[in-house]
Amino acid sequence: EAVFYFESVDNKTFLYLEHEVWGCELKLYELEERLQGTTFVRISKNCILNAAAVAGVRAQVNGRLEAMLSNREKLVVSKHYVRDFREKFED
Image (cartoon, rainbow, N blue to C red):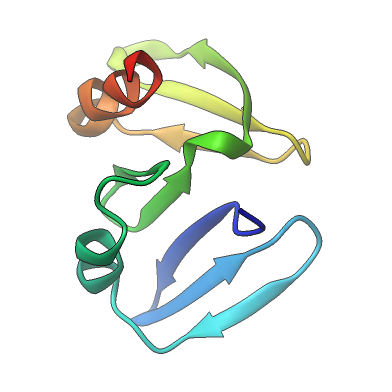
């Protein structure tokens, strides 16, 4: 619950809490497999977001979405992942 999202940068994975960032040993595809059936959803090639941390969503150009997190951080949901992202909120 404390994890807002996971992000891969330069072949390193990080997990983001409300006010902290930690390194993570797992790759995003490994995390995605382990987090199936939870509130986490892939939103881009390099990011898995905890849908429970989303405070609001805004449409952007080119079919993308902007997710505003409860800590006021903003993440872009790439158009390839928009459908999966929306389905998370329909469950």
